[in-house]
Amino acid sequence: MSRLIAQGPILQTLVHAVFPPECLSCRMRVASDDGLCGPCWRDTAFITGDVCDACGVPMHGDVQSGDRCDECLSTARPWSQGRAALLYKERGRALVLALKHSDRHDIVRPAGLWLARAAKGILREDVLIAPVPLHWTRMVRRRYNQSSLIGQAMTREVGAPFSGDLLVRSKATASLDGKSREERFAELRDSIVVNPKRAELIKGRAILLVDDVITSGATLAACAETCLKSQASEVCVVTLARVAKDD
Image 1 (spheres, rainbow, N blue to C red):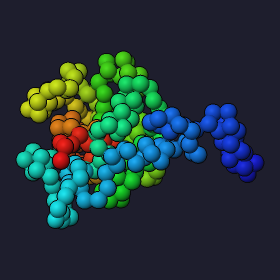
Image 2 (cartoon, rainbow, N blue to C red):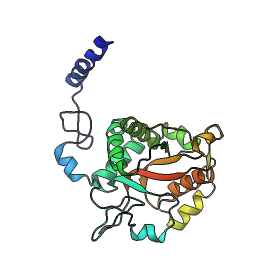
Image 3 (cartoon, one colour):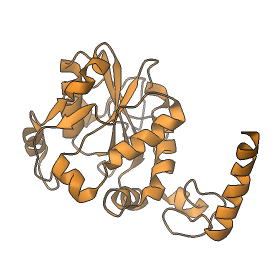
Image 4 (cartoon, rainbow, N blue to C red):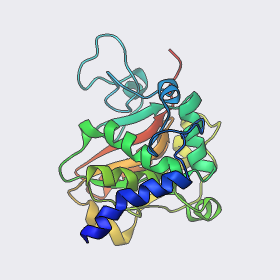
């Protein structure tokens, strides 16, 4: 066993010699395979400082603990707290789209690190982490659920249990791109259910939902409501990116 462990760093060095690690964004060579080069890191809108307690969008001014942004004050959020790792714009948007549509699985591990950091303040002791589900028809076309991949990566960082099939999309929905807030919520109504095989995992448990991006919050709301109806003690959410209006 000790010999195998000792070979780990050596093997990694050999792999890096043959396949030098690259920046996830610009592809410039970097020292490690866990993220972005310095310039791309600075150009990526990672969320820091004061944030909305429900969606994680940055807030300015005299912000108190538990404060919510205007959007989350005007829109009911069935979850307790929410966080996001970065803003969905420029390099951040490009990373999310590359993960979602271009088979860029090299983004998964760094995304897990970013999610773990973003969710640090809202993790509960008994939390169960679960991804927003894809309908099986979309899963066939895409071949993977990006939210499940980054959720698993985050789980490895925080040491919490993970259930990749806790929730199921019971019906296929149209793309939400370009739809209004009202249309998004209407489209997703009654579209997400608890997997009967996993129902016992939810009762009395804190659930942390993971998704790649939050826009209106309709998808996460549908998932959270389903968990609460199945007797989850609490639901929180964390996303890789948050769509936000320009200041």
